[in-house]
Length: 334
Image (cartoon, rainbow, N blue to C red; front, side, top):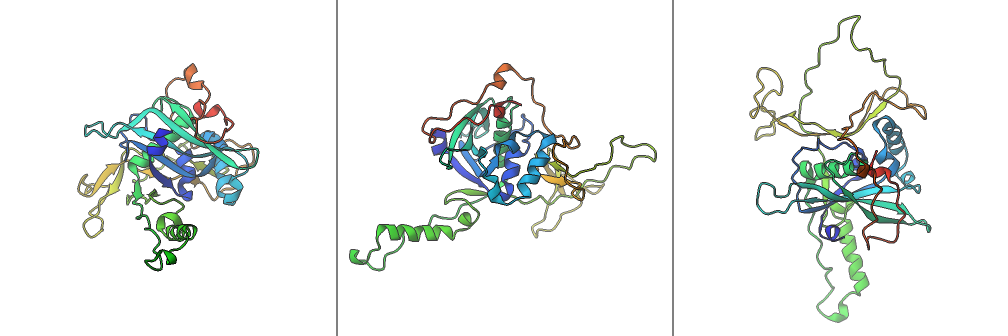
């Protein structure tokens, strides 16, 4: 719990929550430098079945998530609410604030007998080699923190001013607190769904060009893949060396990204970019219940599994919340 209390808070808005919990992280050897020694990243609840779904079944969960009202998400299933990740000490060395994959915590909310949700922190070990979805989610949180832009939180509103210097004119404590909450509710941070002092994810697609299309296959040849019958969900993922257009001091393109006149470092640069989850062949109908797609598999297979990788979730950290049933052992293995 000490890591959670001392962690810097970061909030992912509702529109990005599904991708944050179901997206694929960069390859394990990626160097991710976090913004603090301990980071708590949280978001709206994403149902556990969607988080542990493989690529073939994720399209059904995406259709349910984006095709229904937000209140239908809270139907009694466990919810992934975020996690706590750690970095190496900020000691000024080359290793300072690099993501530490030894240990992280996943925040899971379970519905209790009285109908209320209670959250607990579940430790996850060996994030760099663990092939389970819990480690995958925490690695993706680390990539979001290290590679994306985050809005700086606004200043906390000051104490509500009294109507006069005399204590007789001073508002009651409850009324002063109400004024402070009203001030807080008007901040951009609160309107985005976060709390005061919390940085909010600000995602803007980089200004890059689409790479030149590959030549069409010859007539009579080409791929032996059958035409798509249904639309599929391609989960969010990270690219390695996407060419990104460089802009001049006036915000205009400095030159081409592809072609003979493209110069790396002058007209374009390369960097990792996040590709949001999206529907492929969206014009096609939804797949029937039970359909499993194999057209857009992007999962990192990970190292060979060992018996310890199949271990169930550890007990929640003591004091994290009221006792919460353990949701499933599927988070630590696939």
